[in-house]
Image (cartoon, rainbow, N blue to C red):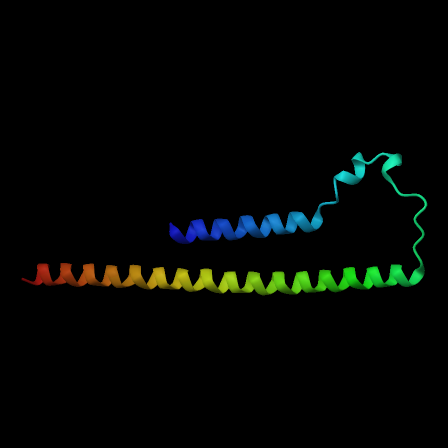
Length: 104
């Protein structure tokens, strides 16, 4: 049961992260025309710099996200294997006890 709850948390976290990436900014729909800056002039160099920075941040974010998901998956897998081995050992001990009792 412990593995299921960890797995559920992992899936929920992964789903939330996916939703965050796919959602558009809801505030954009609520902005009125008055809120938008109209006299803001942006030269091509600044625009390219901002686009490059945004691309770099997104690349770093996705890389870190993938690494984090891999670490979490490995940890959950290790916990699952550990629990499976523990259950197997308990069942083997119980089986050996029952064999010892019935052979007497």
